[in-house]
Length: 249
Image (cartoon, rainbow, N blue to C red; front, side):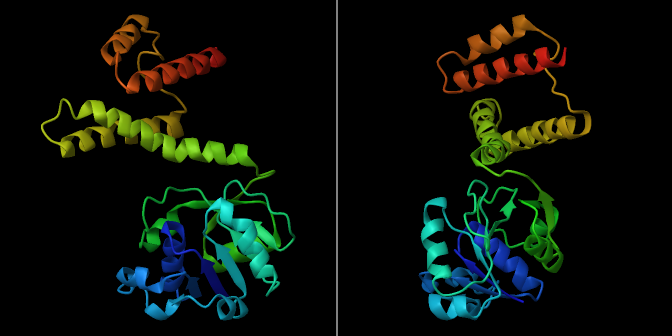
């Protein structure tokens, strides 16, 4: 099978590299090949193309790794030339045609990740279909079936990925006031965040003053954060923590 990817950004290049390293036929469409020269040491130049028409005509499947606002236009352009299955790496788009599917990588892509092991360890989400089942088997990826994909699903994905990162940035802004260098701050945050994730996935619990109802300490936190950008974030988290704790009672 021949796979094509439209969009040579973080997701497109990561998936393209994975397919290439697994000896799966892949082409990547980009509007400007010259801007991708830094990747030629990882993938051969002939994987990339600027010729949209010949690119589409040579494929069995095409993946769209493009922004949400561009999807409808590109889908129409593909359909105008070919009836091949179109697979969107989108978490919020709801397909309107029978040959359009979604396959959302449930992972963060801060940059192109040229590591086969990365794709092997993450999961993708999709509605149930024979097309996606075939792709899952041929590409050796892990797919979790979801139902009724809509913007609320992607909101949850956003909270789980970018919001965790935002919270770590907020914590680091404070932590680096106390460490000798930034690397020490990162070491501390990595220890805290990794054990907290384990507390969730292994025990489904959170810890700290909210869990033990130490209201006096929470007030001290508010006082210490007064005037900072992190105060509103912290207040919202504390309030939501209280709601969770009350729901468990």
